[in-house]
Length: 404
Image 1 (cartoon, helix red, strand yellow):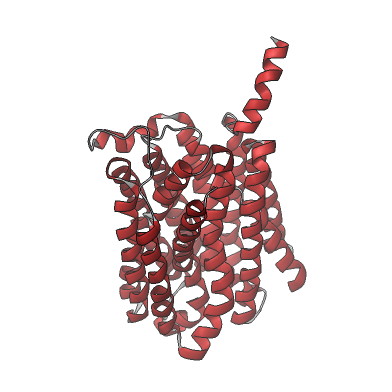
Image 2: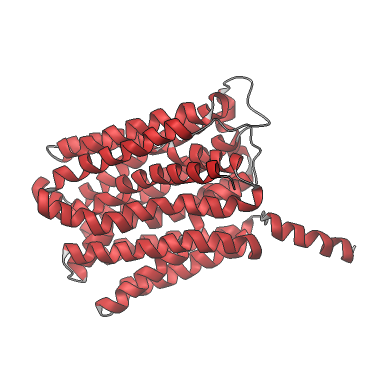
């Protein structure tokens, strides 16, 4: 990879980190805004799912538009809007205004996944695709869980939660400026000759893409149900302080980063199917033990951390690498946006909202089990897909020729 590729990867990962701050970092201010705004768990879930609703449409539409008009033209303005709306969260005066601002945040955040992943898939060598997709994905938990977990609770305590998002949004403006200066429009062999609304729905006719939509739904449900319930479960059920809870979530974010870097790279050699299957099943088992085991805090934290490590393989492979290896470059961002659209609607809108309602009526532990079921299904669904890893397929060709 060239110096430009590394710079592009770093800047795109930085922007994806802003999305992580918006999507995951909100949980660290829940202990402060819940009493300030007098929120129920259902309202807390709405602050997560409202962003998901607009993010879903932005992801789908921006991918469709960028296939025709170019990645940079769509990505950079969306990233700038995301920074500005991130800063605006500090102005919220209550539940309704925070809900509306976070809806606007979703519009800017939504451009990130289909356009950044498509750009990287088109710029880097095919044999590095899974590793690069994993590195990009790692920006989400790195900034959202790890850096957010260590700095947001102390910042909220020291200067008040209202200053957290304006400061962070201003920092990420520098990343967007760098992206505008450095990024070139990727060269593509094929591009739609005109903007055709039928292209926006074409991906849904491919059975493989439909399965990937469901896999993404399960993986994102694991993630966003956790955003709604992680800190509340740690503080109310396991009786930790908000700062310790933030640190535990940060450690799980470190594990997720390691998982997104190591496991997709491993999948280049063992295949996408075994990696996703193992990640989903092991994550479900470990999370179930964490919720139902009633272990001491040290063991509980270790289970949460290990569960995050194994789950981390699903999103970069299921919604980026496998899509890139299945769909042609003339509709790659549209397909990624479509996979993300369905995944966000089901996994970060409907299921986290259901988790909030279940938590208010039946308790946090029962609500958290939604994440267990979702990630298990995500792992098992990969059994219905063909293998797409180039190294694995190349290894199989001589074997098939020899048996023939």
